Image (cartoon, rainbow, N blue to C red):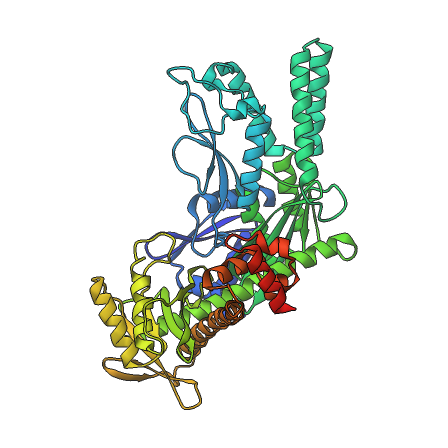
Length: 585
């Protein structure tokens, strides 16, 4: 009855799961007993097990270390691997003659050294920027050594670069600054790091190396200034990680908040499946999270119990070199932080599940319309006016089934005949597709849904033909109660009421494009009505009315303005200003 690690393989001999056990024989036999006590993930795994190996070790701690190492190497399918939706972030030290510090989204097998991973791109940017400035390392893209010396840039004169390009920083000085910068990135801002710098400064002073002492003093001041700018979320000076889980069915989201000296330095969400039990899942998460990190905190705070907390604390303590505690708080400040982490986890899980539903609706819509693939980008257009006046067009974009407001566009119609909705739609589509290669516009859609029937669809096909484009186009048809009834194309109507997800998506698109166009029209119409009041004043035409509107923004501001302020507007004479004041009096 010895502890060890077991390695499960599928029929192809590929490793699909690696686990550890205090009593190896008992643990492995549990998998092949009654399947009713296992959750869906474990049942799927057991169904794929064809063979397994085991490695006996001397202690449970050795089993934990070996398990972490093997999972890191093999990345088995059924182990928790902590994939988030953003990817990790690193700081990369290039493998050059004059190594440079750079941002990196992932590790590459390029001989470079990687610091991280970080769970926040913001933290990477802030940390890297601070390291380069504090240690006066180049922020430019020049390659060193330079062939000919150049004049130092503004960063040198601001005291933020040592200017190796101008020969003002030797290779020896550069390497020393780079070494200090790496130490800062691994522990900068902590009490221990600052205390070590202060001792170093004192040593330089005692050795009468006053220039080096002054340089170290300046670095300490810069780090403290940086630290003071960061928001203190909770009082105290703890360096800790806080973990909390949100669960719906067997789907798990866990959030981690990372604190350094009482400051929140990062937050990330990870998604996985329940692994046998919540206690086991928390344990697996901690092991996977810290297996790829060197920055172990003094304190790990959990929202509930995990398996073998003493063993994990021992492992983390040996990794860090000083004592690490793993706790589940019951009262006080730590409970507040756990609550904040848990709220983040539930919000992220809700968003993910909502997005999954939207993705499902898009897939079903693609199948219903006979598209080659599910439409990632869907565009829709609508026209709005008041009895032909102030005609505008609205364009909305849905991305993966959800509104993509960065892609929304408004069009003020200039050429279409008032009241000619088809002519107005032709102008909107022509102007939209004239930007088909414009990076400031969203990419061309995979599907166009027109707010209307076959006539609108034919206009869209006609305009696209002029641009040598083919994008699937369908119309959205309403019933007598102005509710979405069907989708129409050249082949007739396609009923959608029986497909709940598709109906919800299409009706949502139709309501949104209608709302967007009408909202823009109302604002335009109100502005036009107010400008028409200005043009009724003697001597004030359209251009002068627009100039007044640009300057004062509202009619009330124009009313309150005195003659001097009015006459300062370009194009407005003193006589015009007097007429304006007389009109509103």
